[in-house]
Image 1 (cartoon, one colour):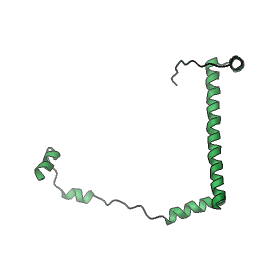
Image 2: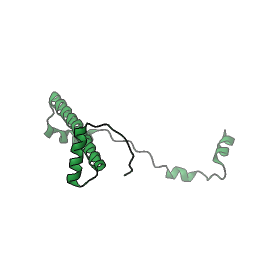
Image 3: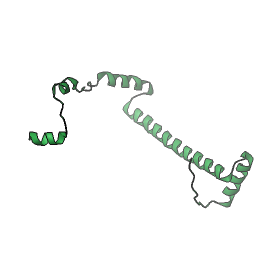
Image 4: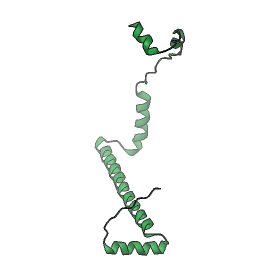
Amino acid sequence: MSTRTNTIKLDASVIAALREAAEREQKSLEEMAGEAIMRGLSVERDAEWRELIAFGHEQGKKSGIREEDVSELIHGWRRDRPAIPRLPDMSDLWRRFPSVDGDSGRFLEEDR
């Protein structure tokens, strides 16, 4: 992991708590601060997920869909959706054209 020097202002009590924790865990102050920040970001990310899950549950309640219905709804949608059109196999078509020597752009210009 690459590092960069940045300056942030922290309350003296926060610095003291970081120093104590760093000594206890035998880590540098920078390591301890970095880990604490990452834990804080992780908690924030977890809160966002919880918010999204709560939104999903609320939408489910509004629609009358229960959690146990979801799997069958997905399978039914996949089963009943229109088939994705497949592109035709062009290999036979390409074999019928003679190969073009030289600059194909020139060939196209002459053909116009």
